[in-house]
Amino acid sequence: MKKKGMLYVFLCYLLSLNSGITMSGQQFVLLEMKTEFGISNATMATLSSVQLVTSIVMVLVLGQMMDRLDLKKLIVVGGSISLSGMLLNGFSTGPAMTAASFIVASIGSNITMAVPFPVFMRVDPDHATRHVNIQQGALSFGAFGWPLIMAVLVNNFHLNWRWQYRISASVLFFIVFMFAVLKPVKRVEKEPEEKKSGAGVTRLIFSPMFLALAATLGSYMFVEIGVLNYAKQYFDLGLNDLLGASLCISVIRAGMTITRFTGSRLIKNRVVLTFSGMTLGGIAALLMAVFRIPVYSLIWCLIFGLAVGPYWPTLFSMGLELNPQASGRLTNIMMLCNSLGMHIGNLCMGTVVDSYGPMNVFYFIAAACGACLVILFVAIRILRKKGHIPEGREWQLSHERFFPKHAAWIR
Image 1: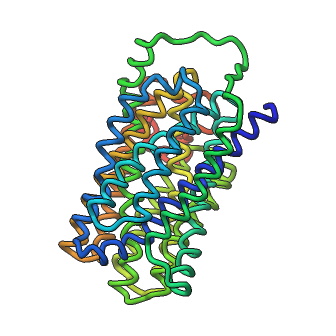
Image 2: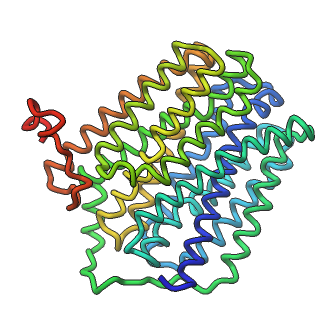
């Protein structure tokens, strides 16, 4: 990979780092925002989920654009729109203004969060999977460290929640400026490849193998958003533990960061990695619901983050590998399912918290982990039956070794 390509990849890492700062910061200030506006969890979740409509629209608009247009310009345009939304919320005077800012910022963030994946496939296709893992690790790192910084700013300097968006906007401005001065992204081909027709890509998108992968991403986001959005209330309102409320999101993100950088190296078999991770994550959520002890609950948070960290990047890179030439369109569809799972999870969990309290919501999260495992199992069965599991030992589940009595049925 040339130096300019390395710079593009590095800036994509920075863009994801800022996305992590923005997402975790929003999760951190959600309670303060809700308290100031005097609205319920369900209403706050609805306010956050207005972004879903823009996500659907952006998928329809971007479609084939990401495979054909200059990705640098898309990042600059998307970053500028997202920047405008952040500033709008940074000076918000009420729920209506915040809702408008969520819509504007969502339009831009749908671009800035999706474009790095086709950039990796375009400038360094040989190492795209590694870049996806590092990119997600950077996102988790930003999400891990930022709540700690925000806790200091809020508790020691008495800054209100609007500063979260003002600071994120400043970081994003620098990144967008750096992209603006670079030359356009050029595709690097390993060797001449046969390009699939648009109809072929459409068939791929609506095929059972791709829809199954997309469904697993959506179901995972349902789980993740439930934990990250309501862990703080679990400690603050449920346990009356201010320290735990300040640390919980960072602890979860720290666990995700560690295993996103190291998980795929420790466990080569990606089927085992995803199944075992979600199983352990569900057990950790159940322990939080049953044993409501401050120090131990932070340990369960860490275990949850360590367990589910590699789940998303592993399956996302699998989707991109189905057709690298159409990585832009595949990215858009997977990001749409990602948004659907996130916003539906936000709405459902917000309603559960209002009805049953922040302590009992983790029973529902544990059940959602179980449902996620079922969807993943179905997805893997479809992929194997259709013969679309990629070649390589890491995808060959040694069921004869682990489940000798049920090997034929699993196969």
